[in-house]
Image 1 (cartoon, rainbow, N blue to C red):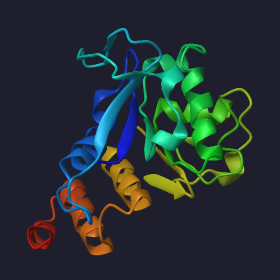
Image 2 (image 1 turned 90 degrees about the horizontal axis):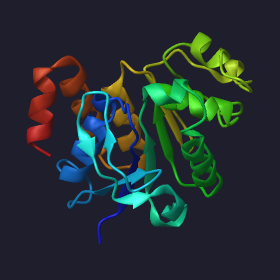
Image 3 (image 1 turned 30 degrees about the horizontal axis):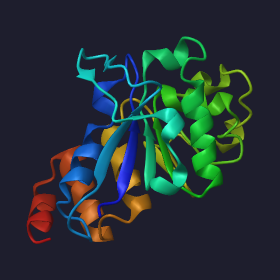
Length: 205
């Protein structure tokens, strides 16, 4: 049975931020264990959502039925709704349940603001679009742990800003130990820099 990665979905989801991670996890290509991961979408309700790019997604699962013990990872993409009130706060609270259970959480862009408001960044290294963005979030006290990096992995938490979907995927793969270190390095060099020498490494995997 394939391990399951849960991907939160909600209106105004930023389409471009998680595609590298989900596509490559699902494909199984280059992975230590062939077969890949099952990607299961999770919504607040079972109603369809519309992404920022206009794609309609029907959630596979509702948030109230999601348990950390059933998951290898929870992915929280960015969305305009993270900056428009507390509608998505239940996803941040669920992230807290995952982290407490030792199950990794990956948050990018606006989702980092949701985690900041929940206090989940205060004692963990993290990044986002800019530290000032997080400092504007009520309850955030984690500026001392903010790192100006493309993406950050600290234990079970992965964070990135909106311009770093490839680095975000890299840290997800690292945390899941999906690729050998040399393959992970080559994958990142190919997809972030179009490095032709990286292609040769991947073709031998």
